[in-house]
Length: 472
Image (spheres, rainbow, N blue to C red):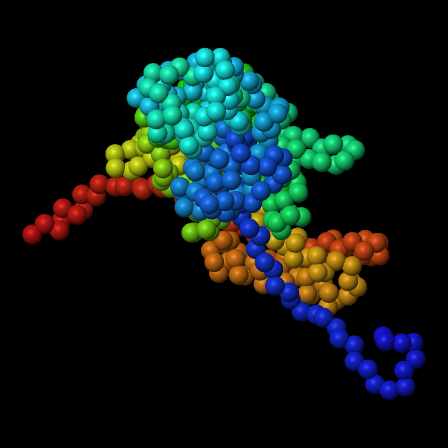
């Protein structure tokens, strides 16, 4: 009321009825790794290849530029990037590396980081970049004009990536107890406050095969309602990958988490170095993250990403036998062990092959299918965020009806889209005794069923001799 006493007429506006529920963003990828450029230990939103350019070229050893390229080649992707690389902490100094200019060019042994010092005859030179020479991110050095003579021997001082310094704790990160500053994957916990959404797919290509990193990713996926993509290490065989699901496994595959999807093998891409030819291997997770984002955008988060072609690759680390009706192929054996792999048959292209999380085969509930688990996550988080507007309101019959009908309206919308088979939100008085309501605690029940993917199709076939009677 406006006042304790009023001699007149007033109107009090009461809000009731269903409220709309907005679906949270599902095609968001959380990428942690290293890049030769870009801010360190701060979540950066990347939605295009133009945004990705801030992290530099696809230099060997640096995972972020190559991962972003793999993601965007699939046609979609919203990426929250955390770059943990610090030039002053994660580089080594290369001194007096000697090269002779041949045909107006040479190439450094390593990709240079930061400033480069050039000497001739042991003395510093006055050669200027883009005036006397050019050098790219890969270390390809070319002379410009006639300032540097053919056959000249130059020595170079520069910094290179120190792989050994990028340890598991650097990737997993920490929170400073005094300042609260986060590093590494801990930065993803800031995502919602910064962007209004959190990553639903977590990747750390070239690092997720370290058990300490994969364990951290799974733990983070639990808190963010996400799925962590865990790569097998380079050089893993089919038998190694399957064996790793057991207690003797050493590559982070011995888990039954619904939040982990295990990936094997690596994929081949063209060498991005303009002075080199051939191919390079890169972890599966970056490509699958892009495929998952594209499927979310084009078809829906309730669709499986299995049986979708992977774009931008030229081969695989190891050929995986595949057959649509052969249970003994390597692709089927890997799937049977809860590992997502590839399907590459005649005329099929290289496709994602596998529907299940690491919880399979020890757990066989419907949410061992990754798409079912993700659909449940999207529903739960969408409802939770929408209910902020109901928090701290008086608990009345109208309030109960508003909450219940808001959720039911949302579930009916999802049913119409094909995201669920059916679903309902209920208020059960037995779940809400007076002592709980008196404490401001209200319980609703939601049940629903997302569609499971058609992983196996069986035809019962009969040879029916009765059809011979049809002969004229």
